Image (tube, rainbow, N blue to C red; front, side):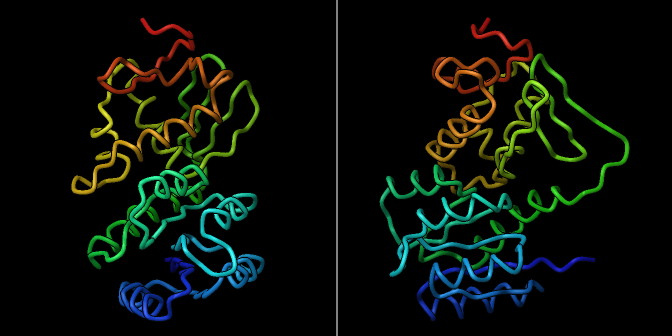
Amino acid sequence: MKTNVIFVVDDDPDIQSLVTAFLVHEGYIVRNALSAARALELLAVEEPDLILLDIQMPDMDGITLCNNIRKQYRRPILFVSGTQQQEDKAKSLRSGGDDYISKPFDPEELMLRVKANLRWGNLLDQPASKKQTLEFPGLAIDLERMTVSVNHQPVQLLAKDIQLLITLAKQPNQVFHPEQLYRQVWNNDVNYSKDTVKVHIFNLRRKIEPNPALPRYILTVGRLGYKFNPYGSAIAK
């Protein structure tokens, strides 16, 4: 069985040591970077299964680094940051982060987040066997390869984007409250964040909708939540 490789990017040596100890105890291989520059050097020679990323670093902030990493890396990025600003959390998710946990953190919660993100990231490696595809007008989701195409053109989605889309598309026209989506996609009842779901819906629309301002597939249903429209109509029925 493959051993997952995790990059820990944080300029605090104490946090590095603490997080590394937890991860090694769980059987993961850990690579450490105390700076953004070092993280990019590591990424040039090895693709990890997960990146744990701090926001506040001296040479480049984590949000800018995440934007740079996303040019070549599509696996999960979990922000582990001491900033308490809601705006920073939103920015981290918009930059391509899949999840966010604040310092100080509960070690058990951190490991649960790590395992949840790895579970979905590892699906990207599963070989195709019997083809299973969800097909809608202009949109196809390959459940085996974990790929998405819009008008027969492949679209690069992050692990959380794919998971969110599949959750909605498997139950067309069902309205999901943001809390339901968070529970299913993030596999977490305790740290529900409506803003996290909202940002990921925004990112997903931006990638699959012809006009994100007038979505065809992922529709907002009043104040109730979101639903997937299988007909590709711009107007919710």
